[in-house]
Length: 360
Image 1 (spheres, one colour):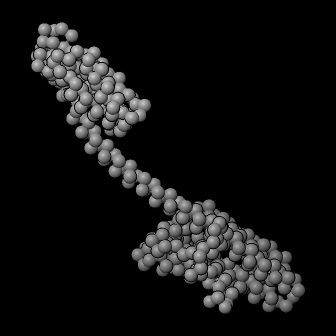
Image 2 (image 1 turned 180 degrees about the vertical axis):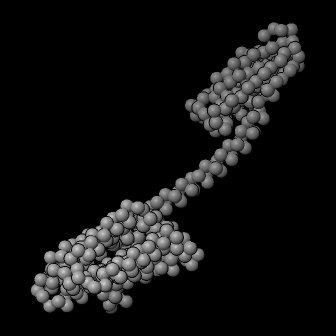
Image 3 (image 1 turned 120 degrees about the vertical axis):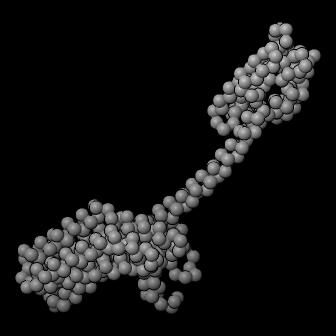
């Protein structure tokens, strides 16, 4: 393969990167083939572009202008029959794009895109055949005008068909080859010059198509990588959310029942976390002839604040005794929490000691 540069270029033009050749950085006009699982997704983007009304509106407008010029300035005897065949092929192409494409999906992406390219090629060959036949009976200035219009069609198609390099080559050469045969076959200097202009246009349109294809590939691969990253993040987010739900069940277990009766007092608590877990803390701890009621709030939010409330639960359970005053309890709890907390976080709290006599 390395000995034949022309074969290399043709191979890369039609099929992409050469086997065993590392891809280049930046805008690679010949990017490596897509992984098999991404090919159908890439072609689905292609068909969405072809189904856009503005695409068909543009191509139809150009085609109507060409046909109108042929109808007005040509003496081609089979013009009506040609127009009927073009209309039938146009309808069949639309059916392929909007209906048969979905049916052919079951045959795999290679057959699917080959069928689409074949139908597009037949359509353009049909149109170009009639146009070239009409040129045989038309003045030179009409031929020049229509060549310019065809150039505009090819320039637009280089962008529209940017998802398929082979499809664009079929589309372009269906126009170019009959036109070159006509121009170089006339043996006139004017048409020979026009023929060489068309040849130069082939390279320009091919380069445009390659650049657009490279851009679409880069955009597609970037979107796919972003979608994969988003999927990973969503999966991880779901896992974290499940973990937080589990943590919230554990944390809710440290709070007293919403209605708690310890004679002669009745307590009611309501916990409304901002998220799955909270930095709020409350507890009711009976100790023989005394009841301690605590309301606290950890600094920050989320997991760190929730962990601080769990630590506070453990500390207060240990330091609160019947003969412990609130001042002593807060001082001891403060010391124990300071041993645990190695950051700037803290816990503010309010502590009550209630006696059966009603003394608070």
